[in-house]
Amino acid sequence: MRYVRKLTDMKKKRANMKEKPDSKPTNQTTYLSVNLKENLKEVKETLGGSTDIVIREIVAGTDGTISLAVIYTEGLADKNFVQDFIIKPLMLTIRDTEISDQGAEHLDTKTILKNFALANGEINEIGDFDSLFQHILSGDTVLILEGYTKGFSIGSKGWEDRGINEPSSQTVIRGPKDGFSETLRTNTALVRRKIKDPNLWIETKPIGKKTRTDVALIYLNGVADDKIVEEVRQRLNQIDIDAILESGYIEELIQDKAYSPFPTIFNTERPDTLAAGILEGRIGLIIDGTPFALLVPAVFVQFFQSSEDYYQRFDVSFLIRMMRFLSFFLALITPSAYIAVTTFHQEMLPTQLLISLAAQREGTPFPALIEALLMELTFEILREAGVRMPRAIGSAISIVGALVLGQAAVEAGIVSSAMIIVVSLTAISNFVMPAINMAISVRMLRFPLMFLAATFGLFGMIIGLIAIILHLCSLRSFGVPYMSPMAPFKLKDQKDVIFRTPMSRMFTRPTFLKPKDKVREKQPNPESN
Image 1 (cartoon, helix red, strand yellow):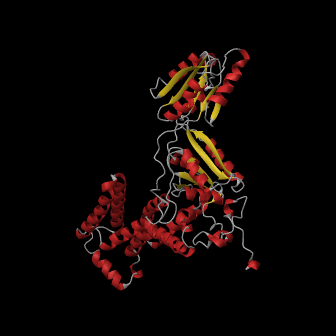
Image 2 (cartoon, helix red, strand yellow):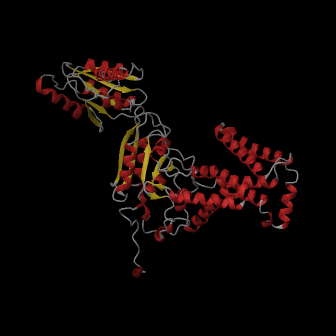
Image 3 (cartoon, one colour):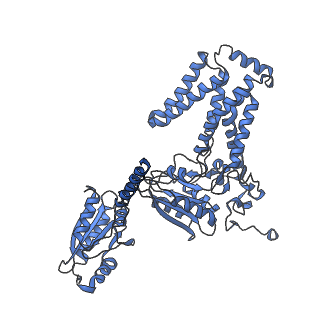
């Protein structure tokens, strides 16, 4: 009997669930009405009567028989443009024009407004409230008419922006000084200035259910691999999130591996760097509201290349790039190598150096690992403090703090002088790398290597380095091996890896990107010399 009662109750619950309507709100498209007052009421209710939304009702035609409404967002739209090229023509220019609202002449009204009254090249027809709100909140002006279920969106974006300034994170001595700003169309125009090719295609897509942030996908048609372009497009379409406030959101949502200390997407605020990557066959992503653009696919050696490498002579670029790779290894293994040698492998040191180090460490109460951790953590805290503090005193506090704390720690006998030298060399080497996200990866990996060196000596450090190399070889960026063109090794692509050959020798684009057009420079005919 109990089983029958339970079964009966379950059937009743299922019947009640079927009878109840779905409580979840459905995303149904609401279309414009022919009644202007109803449309304006819907706009006001949806936007909550926001004070920055300007609604201007006017009449047009010979007898003032056509009722219109102009809607725009104050602060996002150019107010002078709206008044001079939208409202004024509607009120004055077509005052003497024969416009009727009778019968089949409705089409003539829209034609006259679009072709004779509105002096703007960016006019689109809209028929639903979703598109209406999207255009209004993006800085456009919307025009709706009495008796029509269609309206116009007129391009009138004109908000205040920071303008084009010199990049702050990727400075160069020789090269362009312009950098991206927070405005999407300003940034796409900077790329257009670099690449004046009709095959430079730009696709714009709004992402974010609440912010509706415009994201521009830029690539060179006929050069970029179609599979990579389609892969980027699919990953962008799969993003389902409320807000996109910076390119870091996009970077984290479309990257190949989330749990990796190494960046698999390159970011830059330099238009020439983005243009150079696009010319090689990569795909650029520009996000509205941030000066940092993304470049995919990204490989390991790309984070050691600077745009200035191609503005200097090839021999100078070779020496500077070699110094960057050397600095990478110094920043990664210097503290762990010092800990391993002084703790387990003293026989590797010259006698005089060993005696000097032993004399310095005679009064030090902590082992080498604790010394290194104290100084590394102290320096990281000082570096973060210098970044977060006001610019006027940030640099002074970081420098003075490092000098005072270092000197005081040595005099107090907490750390040795050699450890100060090791930590300073590590910190300076870390700043040599042009890509800050790769420098952060080195800062993260330095601490595990220090623990391995303190536990197993040089053997532990070597095991850690092997693990890092294996992890690097397992990474991929949009289908491209992360260690390309070194692993897998491709001889043709070694012209611009550790060293850069002269421009006259760089005939082809990188083959690991699988470009459709592999030749970027015509090889000279040796018989003509």
